[in-house]
Length: 55
Image (tube, rainbow, N blue to C red; front, side, top):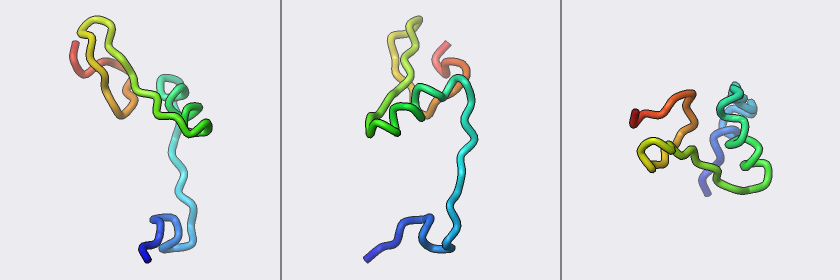
């Protein structure tokens, strides 16, 4: 059986949260996938970024 990444070293890894990614992290707490949407182009982007990769 495969181990989760955090189980391999017995160390929990943390991820830095930024204001622009907060909706994503709040969604993970509720087991929801929240993806950013660029209104200018009508495209979705994932992973969270402070600016659109399309404009």
